[in-house]
Amino acid sequence: MPAKRLSVVVTRRLPEAVETRMTELFDVTLRDPDTRMSRDELAAAMRAADVLVPCVTDQIDANLLAQAGDRLRLIANYGAGVDHIDVATARQRGILVSNTPGVLSDDTADMAMALILAVLRKMPEGISEMMGGNWQGWSPMAHLGRRVGGRRLGILGMGRIGLAVARRAQAFGMQIHYHNRRRLRPEVEAEVEATYWESLDQMLARVDVLSINCPHTPSTFHLLNARRLKLMKPSAVIVNTSRGEVIDENALVRALKGGELAGAGLDVYEHGVEINPTLRELPSVVLLPHMGSATIEGRVEMGEKVILNIKTFADGHRPPDQVVPGLL
Image (cartoon, rainbow, N blue to C red; front, side, top):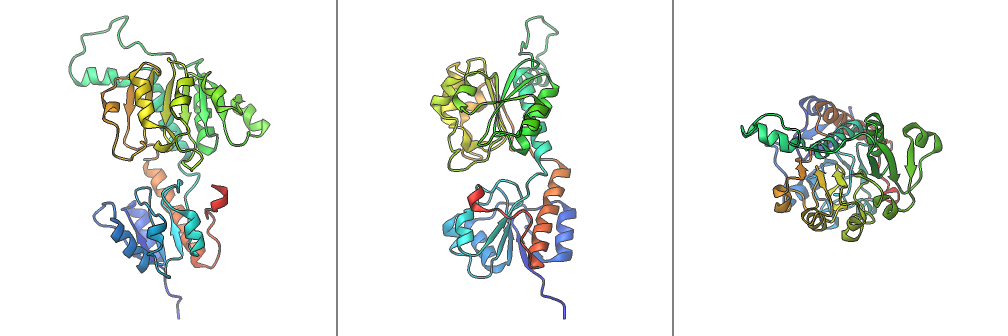
């Protein structure tokens, strides 16, 4: 008699190829239409399933986990970041958590580089003029941005994505600086000619561009606060493709309005879709709708990792991408 298939609930629509493969392997409940689940719906799903496949829009905290019941055994997150999941509480309740690291590094790094170029070269200003039909022809002093080559790029968080950003920026002639919990191996530093700063404050005072690539954890919440923003040059710009909570968004707005920073390129925001309205009004700011990892290839590869984690778990083994609370 064949083994009973795992019951899997997916909280958002995924690429068709991923959903099809999941349906072949597991007893899957897919999300239709593609809307964010309410807390009540999430609680019901966690009681009904062996495996929950959530994403960044699902806040799975201790109170929600307390409603999960005894059936749920794996939260196979569709995404690398797990700051929306209380991993420690899940572990205490005997629920494993897995994620999808590595597959989005290049896509996110591409977007970080695009934001650096867009902010330094004032691309939105030019696009707005063209789309509005207001262009009167070339002028020597119009849309003057800053040259990318030779700029000092500070990378906050030199993991997979940070290193991918460094490689791209190096090709553009930028000088690479970084701050990280741990210094890279000498051969990796040499590859991108990176300068390590043990002191974040000292690095911030010296860079022209800051790329935020660290995860959101209790220790990184508001890591870029008002005091640290004041350390940066008035000509410096900030790009964030990681998590919005790393920056004190109100302090960032004040710095931009007061001329203490030259610009910002943001793909993520401290309060999700509730963006500080002043950010939309500042011509020096480029805003994107959390699309740093949004490629077809990346989304499919994320799904393949989720499936591998579930299949490995179903076979009685530890998921290859299990998240360990102590390592966050």
